Every structure is written in structure tokens, then in C-alpha cells.
Length: 144
Ligand code: ZN
Image 1 (cartoon, rainbow, N blue to C red):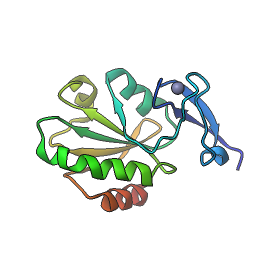
Image 2: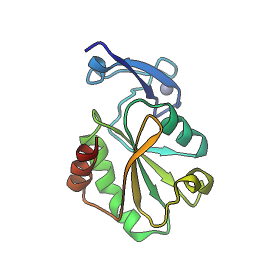
Image 3: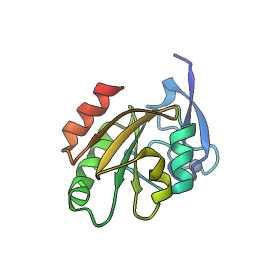
Image 4: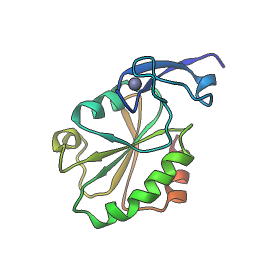
């Protein structure tokens, strides 16, 4: 398959065009030269949130969380583990809803943690409540 897709760099947040067949070959960013696929959650702010959600053609999973939320804190290692397991399936990102409420507002997040799967700017699934890594992985795969 020689199809290209737009993949947003987790470091400088610029959009890269990557052949789908090269995703597993450690592609690097054309702008900052860093690895595009890190297997780690990407911490977003208001600006980078919209870049990743709106411009990426690779599925994006956003964990809407807040520092004061106990279940969010306890899910963080599971989400990081899922980011590694799912790195060739989706880009896992985190949005601190306390620091960047304006990014979360359009999505009407009522409880946290809430995870939302986006594909090309469209929400395709969401789930609320903390989950272990294996469950996050199965859920993401099941909705894509
Ligand atoms: Zn970059």
C-alpha cells in the first residue's frame, strides 16, 4: 500500500505526509527531525490539540484529564502502556482540562477521565472512567 497519510509530529506539531507502509519503519519529522512515532502519550495544549485532532489522518485518542482527579492519576501508567501497544494504530494524547478548558469545552466533557477517539477531526467514540491498559487497547481497536 503506497497511500500517504497526514501524521502530526508529537514534538513540533507540524503535519507530515507519511506513506502508510512506512509507519512501522521509524519515520522522522521533516521539520524537527525527531521520531514521529514515540509510543508515549503526547501532552497537548489548546493549539496543539486542534492541530492533532483536526489535521491528523491517523486516529487520535485523547485522554481528557485533570491534575486533581485521582482516577486520572491512577490511569496514567495504563494510558502510557496503551500508547506503546497502540503506536501503529493510533496516537494517544492527553489534554489537561484544567489548564486548557477552552480546548475541552466544545466536547462537553462531563466526567474525567474521558477518552475520545477522533478520526480526521470527527469524534467516533468516547468512554468515561479509568481502564487498565489491556482494556484501553481492546476498546480503541474495537472502535477503529
Ligand atoms: Zn516535528
